[in-house]
Image (tube, rainbow, N blue to C red; front, top):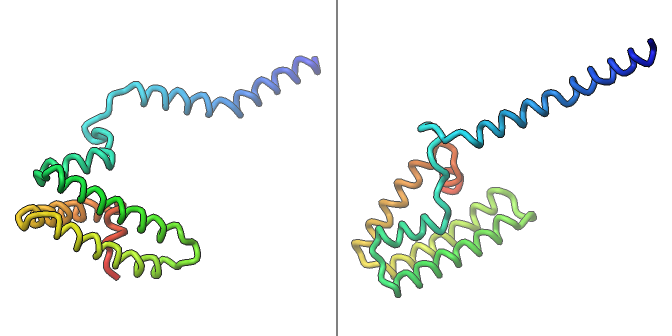
Length: 144
């Protein structure tokens, strides 16, 4: 009798301990099989896809594309170094990032034709406005 009770208690304990995990796995599996609803939408575009769309929208020449990518890549590398510097406070990182952005902006202005540059600025403004809901773009462009 004691042995039977011990088995029952062990089985019930196992169900209580692992039951929620099984339910969570089933929910995840069902969710991954379901098609995304209209509110979930599609996956966000990758950086490479955004860049290709930008180049297309700006109608960049091959030479402009090369220079444009190089300018953005240099900015990304420098900004990443600043973000990863654990010796800097958040305010110091923001202060160091500003001249990096300004330098990139100057380079891009030299690369693009005036009408392309104007369109570039509009595109960036739209991106900032979308990001003000708390996305990554909102943090980097917030004013103190």
